[in-house]
Image 1 (cartoon, rainbow, N blue to C red):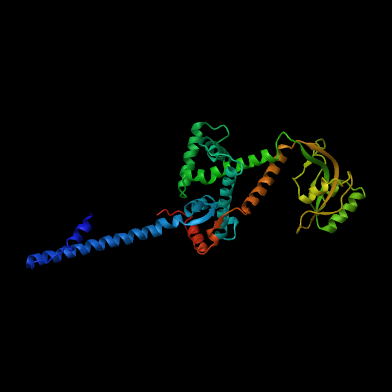
Image 2: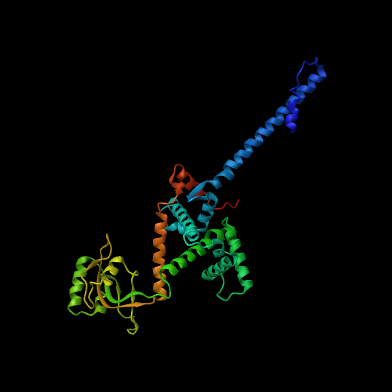
Length: 362
């Protein structure tokens, strides 16, 4: 039994009581005063404790996004904002920036879940300590903190410097690994899985050798087509002010043949270039590049060939496929995604998060 219970039990005794002496009455009065003081202190302590929790603990556990059962809380959100402060100026407002960061964290979680559930990859193996250290080294090299051939001592010094720098913005090196390094490793692995599935290095893919102009405005496209048909040199046409980009049939050195694989350009480009109805060495009519644009293709196909992808083209195709995968993942009907920033009280959460990006030095 607690002390408070023992004290209260003294006033729960049954049966008649004998008359108290003046000394006993005074003693009892003093005891009641002490008891009231103790109760007041306990009540005040509870109020202070709850106030501290309500102000300094609970807000950090507010829900920001839920992605298929996984909840991202305010603490992680604010730390991600701190890590991305340099990007804030690219947005029209702090809240727009914060919403973009939340969307990025949602995407990171979808990628993690997709790699694990759809491709069956063990996340732990992708984000092992060795993999994290290798990625950190790569990051340090990228930012010029160490050289490619840095020694272990140089790496450890850079690690310590990074740790100290992160501490000034209220983030630990473990936070950085969790929020930046590991999602990067997971994203890279997912792209590798997509690449291996859709663009194996051992396979050949449709390519075309073309001369093509992307021109702003249908009238300009019609005029350039006439000039081209009348024998004007392709290299001259490509310098016209209306031309936004072009594709030559040979490289700049005039010795290497340029081959364009299916999927590198737009769908409209592919539909003409790789169509069985397309004739070689014939200039196409102006082809609208995409709905809503004012760009038109003029394409002359020189040759077709099935061949391996270049490393550059393969990387581009994998990046395009990854972008499509992510878009499909975000729009999946099987998702249970809740963005609490769009719910009642969301603006208050955004304001609280932005207000806590800057770490107090007091």
